[in-house]
Length: 154
Image (cartoon, rainbow, N blue to C red; front, side, top):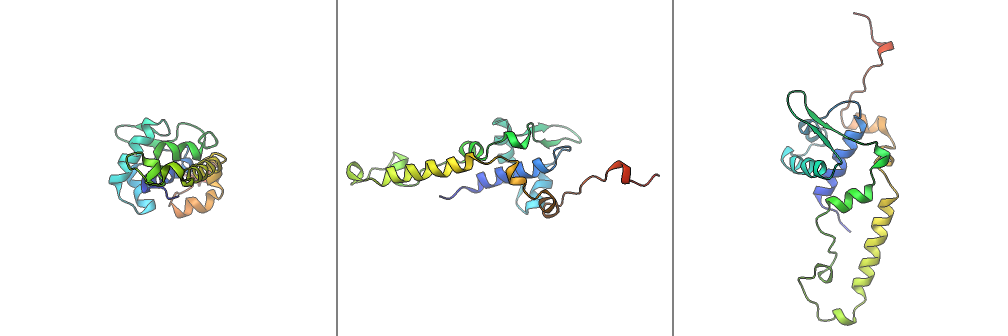
């Protein structure tokens, strides 16, 4: 099983937003953090918004945020929604015919494997992907806000 870059980017965007729950992030910041182009991220963010996984705030000072708690976002649901094609073989795609299709068990085996794959992903939430928030924040160049009690008075 191989997921598309589109699905990969979708999960990356959600991870980045989950780490910055209290502030907005921009596509430019996310692209820079992951060293990927902004263009595909614009499409990904649009679809994430349509699906309800991301809220967008327009205008000056706008950006993106996660509208729900990370524990409420199922990784399996995101993958199902964002992955364009689960056709593991020609017999899954329907457009192509196979000479041995009527006597072959391969489609059933692939179907069982795909079902098992998605069932495993269903056991994980976005919160589970934040297992090491400190390390993720450093790797994604997210500066934690300094607690007010530790700030120096002006």
